[in-house]
Image (cartoon, rainbow, N blue to C red; front, side, top):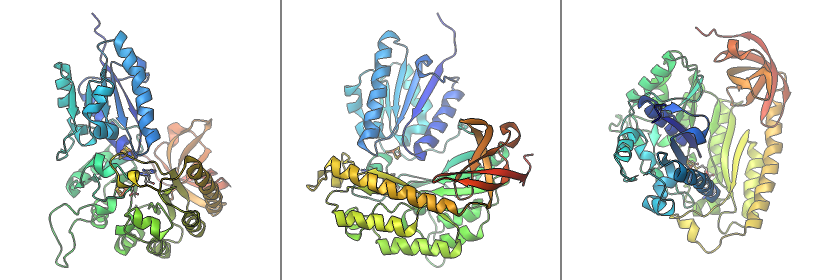
Amino acid sequence: MTTSPRRYHITTFGCQMNKADSERMAGILEDMGFEWSEDPNDANLILYNTCTIRDNAEQKVYSYLGRQAKRKHEQPDLTIVVAGCVAQQEGESLLRRVPEVDMVMGPQHANRLKDLLQQVFDGNQVVATEPIHIMEDITKPRRDTTVTAWVNVIYGCNERCTYCVVPNVRGVEQSRTPDAIRSEMEELGRQGYKEVTLLGQNIDAYGRDLPGVTPEGRHQHTLTDLLDYVHDVPGIERIRFATSHPRYFTERLIKACAELPKVCEHFHIPFQSGDNEVLKRMSRGYTHEKYRRIIDTIRQYMPDASISADAIVGFPGETEAQFENTLKLVEDIGFDQLNTAAYSPRPGTPAAVWDEQLSEEVKSDRLQRLNHLVAIKAAERSQRYMGRIEEVLVEEQNPKDKTQVMGRTRGNRLTFFTGDIQELKGQLVNVRITEVRAFSLTGEALVPVTSNQ
Ligand code: SAH
Ligand code: SF4
Ligand code: F3S
């Protein structure tokens, strides 16, 4: 009979939303008496928090799962949980495919982990994928860092982009109340966190589902109002938010970002394609002209703002000329960073069954050409930092050089400089930039600008 504590391991795939959910689920497990196991093979509870945005993300999950399923034959007390977006998409059929799995739970059920596990320990195989109202989380998340934290503000997505599984797996939009968000941030401030990233798949939709309209007839709770409301939380020095949808990005929001000193000058606004016909077939609801106007307005208010985005190449029917419009947009705007992907047909999405699917060769050729341009433009954008003094929030030691620490500028550029992590972790340090690369910078510290009480 062993009396060793129960040990858990979580492997997280996918976006920041999943990372935030994993931190909350880890908090729940620790509350239940589980201890973190760095080695998954040493854990008696394995949780995969999965992603299904593209086919390769989904396949990765099955290969990990296969290994643990095998282990279960030698170690029957192993509990295997599949959470997140593949779980939601596959539901019960996942149990048929991998019968060793004990529980399949969709993202909306993350905060119910304790109750659901109780059912597993009572001897049931559990499938929790029905849509529910997401409960406020009462457990403390186990966060990966002690400097920066994610805070969910809106779950789900009500858009219907024709390539995207997210609305199917994350459900309809559900905003948290401004008070719940603020009190989570206050707690983070008390714990010494310095930076918060507010999260939503479509964060500009924040508040649409909350009651209340202003005398002018607009929703009372918008992202702009939320930024105002949480801006003075003590201890929190920087605020970011992601992901923005071009359709809802307002000048009112841009103005607030320019005026609120803690809100960092970095905007992540995916455009997906630079071609109006493709955008229409994606059901994105804007044109490339509108996208350009948003960026122009941001740069009017904040000339130095960093802009990042996501783009898809090889959408069904995309012609060479239409793809070149994406290259042109990237050329013209000059993104600081761009996440690129080849279109991947996803189950249950309209575009997956269209006739004009492109070959893998065409998609990967376009992806390569786009990535090449992205690196050139990012390197150009990095040049503006040369010799400048940038405020860096120190997060970690540089894993490749122990004499250095690393952190991010307000514009979100990863920056390295010589220093002692014990002394500098969580500090805002002014750094003179001496070396620039496409996606990172190196510099030397001036005197620290705040002290870490
Ligand atoms: N809510 C965000 C994006 C969420 S998904 C938005 O509206 O922009 C993250 C990124 O994955 C997307 O921006 C898109 O670029 C990419 N993506 C989504 N579905 C995809 C698919 N079927 N194939 C390839 N890339 C996809
Ligand atoms: Fe997917 Fe579109 Fe929603 Fe983004 S806005 S999550 S791309 S459906
Ligand atoms: Fe993936 Fe789900 Fe996020 S599909 S990108 S983990 S919302």
